[in-house]
Length: 309
Image 1 (cartoon, rainbow, N blue to C red):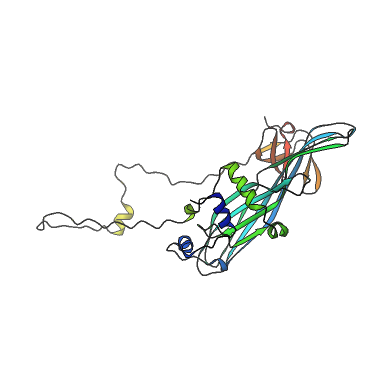
Image 2: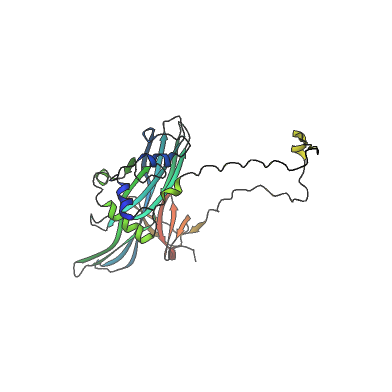
């Protein structure tokens, strides 16, 4: 069991990784080396919405800002061997309108298997990040709280090894200056109580099949073994065993809700108004807002502006 400090040190390569770790990661299977694996990532979508708590005619207001990001990850395996890698993906936030301190607010850790000379794509969505701004026009004072999305960063490593062999980020400067990351990671793990368990990432070796015990029958007793023909195996019906239906995969139904009043939204950098009577796909629901998909983009609207109860 690694301590928090030693885990972070290993994560950034401050301690050397010995041969024992390499054996642990590969076990008895042969996997593609890290040098033959390429990982890239890009942003494929974002949603940002403004929820006004109150506002005045002279310019004062109290607003909430809600934002999410969608990321696509692509893994290329250039080896003739199958690849098995671990990815730690973090969304990074920062205080509203301030460059620092950065904070990790969403983490995804998972194992990816890629066939020999093949590639794989997968997508991720961040948690909804909320920030708030209160402006008093008469006083000229502005108060902000919460965090806004700055970007994302991912680390690629071999399963069972804490030290990454590659990393990708939305911001090149974020990769060049990672001195903030160990403290942010430790704070995130302490708050969420999610500490890495590298040993659980190793595929267990298959248990050996026990050899059949020799029969203790009398030597004079003949043993007759009858091998059924393939036709017998194919047509024989089980006795006193009810036939079970094959498992089927079911998908959750798509839910649509109706916008009941003109609703202003922000998609990317443009403002649009959803007209009343428009049906939109429901993605997620919070206490007073819902996340919906409109014109192929994800955005947020107030529940009071829909027919959702």
